[in-house]
Image (cartoon, rainbow, N blue to C red; front, side, top):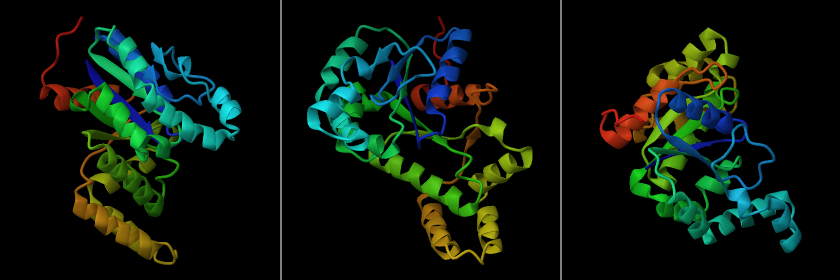
Length: 254
């Protein structure tokens, strides 16, 4: 059983990508289940096999602790860690190759709280990876792109898991926009050049310094364009999972 955590900012398309990837796996005879870790979501794009909302209700947390939605999300994240044995006991009843894990919409709740490390360790850190979705609306300009890459690097640093970077919802972009963003990721010199072209922007100096810091960490070098709606890039996600979990070998299909 291998875990793929779908992580990204709110609106980056995590739930729809879980739905699309699960459907792709089903169509290719590869057994997988879905696990929702977002107690605050009102509606999922798929039918979750395991749903944290069965144990934790955001509305009940708000009432019990007299909190607003944001504070309740923080408490709910900690309650997930405290009740992780309930989730793992259900998960242990499944025999499957992949667990597709949909994480909370608020990135900071999953990536920057100690409760997330407790959850990852309980589910099996040694057999887990991250699929990080970057929102193309944030990445259209160099400063936004670098901000997204910074978040991606911080998530990997915090969780210490193998990661595949995905540029999501490319069906909403013009072809030249997609090519430009992909070039930024794979060719830092192109991003540097576009930063220089925006030298009238007061944020450019800060952005360039962040860019240089990220370049030194080795975060650049590969990204896949994906679309849940157009079913683009799903095979590439599977190939990345094969490489991470099985050294590139294709596990036996059902």
